Image (cartoon, rainbow, N blue to C red):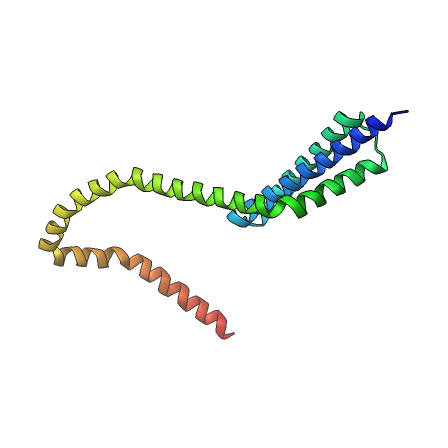
Length: 168
């Protein structure tokens, strides 16, 4: 038989576990909102999410109550999730979205910074090439037309076949 102090400790531990589960759910929700994954990735994320939630719940139960299930354990998890949802969720979501936007802008700026020397190098190479291209313009366009011929033939054949099957 446990004392009231221990039962209160278990209840507060499960409330903390519920708050942690609510936070993990918000992370999951923001991640899905930002990246918009396809069906397979969504299924894998769902499995990962529920696995993490299960591990958190088991850890909290084992750490606080040696794994014994009582009604107030479930009540503590529910209270924790509700407390998190009504008090912290909106602020946490706004903060996470802000941090992700800042990181995204930083990564884009870093990418542009790293690619800039390559663009300058291409520009230095393309100016002489454009001069040569202007001088050899008739040959260039004829060669371009000849190289595009197989793709045009394949596209025309595909269009003809699709048109034929649509009529039936």
